[in-house]
Image (cartoon, rainbow, N blue to C red):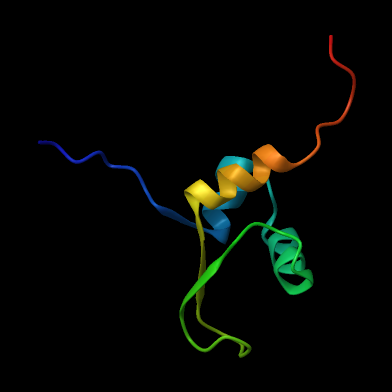
Length: 73
């Protein structure tokens, strides 16, 4: 059985590169509690430093729940 080479979590830079949401915007949403679910996998919560990642499944669910703009063609 082969294991697919898919990532379960994305860093801020990976989210920016693949989903178009900037690192600064992700940080602001994290601070406000309005963005996608995130995990701090090193360092202490509430302190600077450490590594933050976004679970892909939660990120995709959050993006799908966001209202779209414009009119349907």
